[in-house]
Length: 111
Image: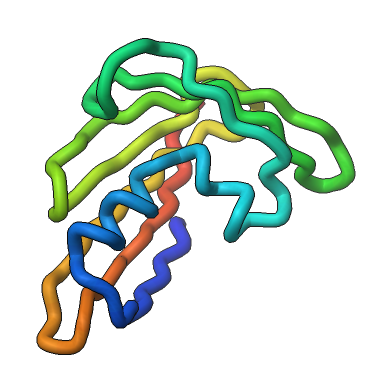
């Protein structure tokens, strides 16, 4: 079973997508993430990979994340392709009259 959160943000959808899809911003809102480095060159999109260092359950972990979907201002997903916890995280954005709605769902993947 996964974890799903939904939040309304009083910012335009383009701003929210730009911030949320920039994996380098993860340490700003997840205290367990210590460092993120982009591995692949070029713009963000399907196949873009990142090396992520985290502290979870008292252990220092290194994982590689890869974008599996990327639709600007609508949806993006990335999954752990190397590391001890195989999960995929899906983000969906919805335009609201007063800003944007961001829905995130983390889904465990089979080993």
